[in-house]
View 1 (tube, rainbow, N blue to C red):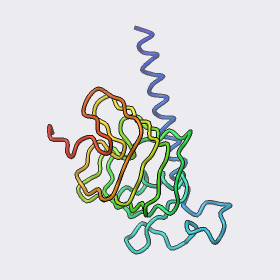
View 2 (tube, rainbow, N blue to C red; view 1 turned 120 degrees about the vertical axis):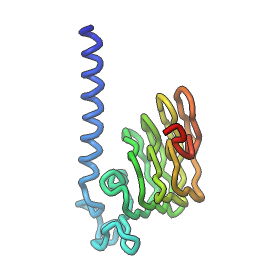
View 3 (cartoon, rainbow, N blue to C red; view 1 turned 90 degrees about the vertical axis):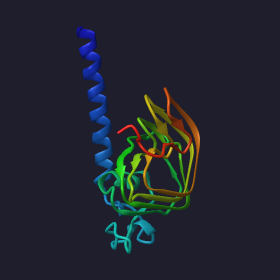
Length: 177
């Protein structure tokens, strides 16, 4: 009984630590200190609107998906997420233009880059390579559920779980709800 409580407490602490790490990265604005003024991500005219989308050049910039899940984003560089434990964005209703860039070595539990791409969500021109995903139930490298639009996207890597697994997306909708 005591061992079970310890395991549950330990798992909760790990989950909180992971969430806190994600938020710490996400609170940084894309124009992080030390970047060159010529860096495309240092533009001060970013507000997540269609006209001025958030520009993603680093894994820290990518974490802004958690803070502004309904905003517009543009990937401006290939990203390597090696050593970075990603927490899937719960529900993404914004738009992500990958600009034919690659996100490599995504490591996540419980889903891929996103858990759910909402009805208004759109992901296009994105490549995910070398992903390592574990999901107890359904899982996909890009998302578990897609209710929105995915265009010109591809994924490769490994995904483990019990059932309902997909390479790019696990399920097009959560039909049982």
